[in-house]
Image 1 (cartoon, rainbow, N blue to C red):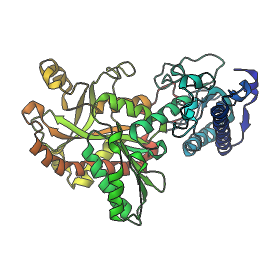
Image 2 (cartoon, one colour):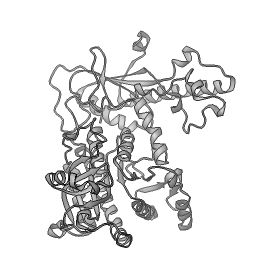
Image 3 (cartoon, rainbow, N blue to C red):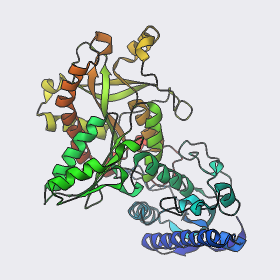
Image 4 (tube, helix red, strand yellow):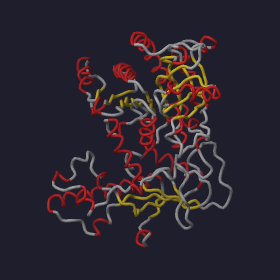
Length: 492
């Protein structure tokens, strides 16, 4: 790093001052590059080297110099593994203000860390300085021409080495402060808009993932009912395409807004019910398959959600199960293969006690059943996740593995979502509903399926939502130490 960049870092007295300085530096860098782009579009004049040097992300550094044993803290995050300098580049600090303040306040209070803020060497790629992207070039300049004069997204600079534990420490350089740096976060923020059809700022910290559109219908119905409660905590429902339903909207206007949402244009449409306190719920219809499941969770993870839960359909593998029964996954036989390099199948994916208990308590609340009565409908066990929807055609090869795993259900997303939660340190859980029994001749037929959907989807969704309500009161314990490694970055 050049000497002028070392000297550009300045100490700040408090976390609040640090965040304000990050906002100032980020806004200044974005504005400088926007101005340079506009000037280039208008005159064809490229930015000078001095002007381009302003197109950089701010950097946050913490210095922990204690020579004693670090304090023992029960929380899983905001902890130093040892003395040293820790750093990360930051994007969108205004949006991440509360998250940054939470991490910094813990680290300053409990460890006496000092904070410095400055300008990094990491350039902000030009596609990230405009909100929509259609502002770029006005059709007059190609991407190749812009890349000659402005920073571009470089795949070599965007990766998950920190999250995957493959980063290499070099003596004299800072250690990672967070799992994702600014370029990786910006990359995912734009992908979220593309896949979900809504502004990434709308994504709420409590996330439900589903693999069937009927859950969306039920979610919208429930959300509209919540908005009708004048004393309720929810304020707005945002649909794909930016369609917004505000509290107090009359029935016909609500129906018109729902009908106008172009959800079908997006691969994984998302629906966001917002609360006054920022603790709302997002439902994403991720569709079918482990590729979609990995894709969306790769991007959601940069927002550092409180948790994500899978609520979808599965095939029941036991004769004792009935259509409409629930499966609470406590283990996963991962036959999806998509994460074999990052999290090899032999790495166990632990069940998180807080989420398991919350899902079971929610089932009691919603169904009114408990004890043996609930056990007849809700079974805990291993879920097999495949990358092949027609795995039944390979039953002779798969039979032994399923038997050895004692699996009770099969799907195409849950194991991937759990492994991604483990890998990216986002608490996870799975509650599935049995929609067919492929090993016992009960396959999905149109008539039987429709009857099942009408009866089961609403109750299943309400259990997921009730579990999130329970977990909202357990945020500190929810972020389990099971998800943290021995050389973990301090930030959650």
